Amino acid sequence: MVHRVPEYGNRYLRVVTLPDQKTILNAFFDRNFKEVTQNEA
Image (cartoon, rainbow, N blue to C red; front, side):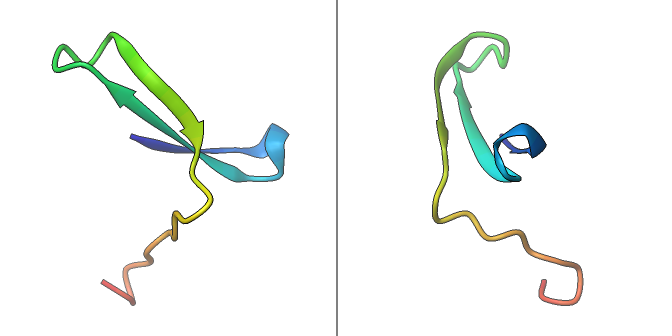
């Protein structure tokens, strides 16, 4: 999962979860994430 965080300058936070999708394994700001618009897909 990737979420934009307005409180941190709209940086993207990547969240890595275990297979149960509830337990967070790791979370970090992803410097290389590029949001894809429908026109680019």
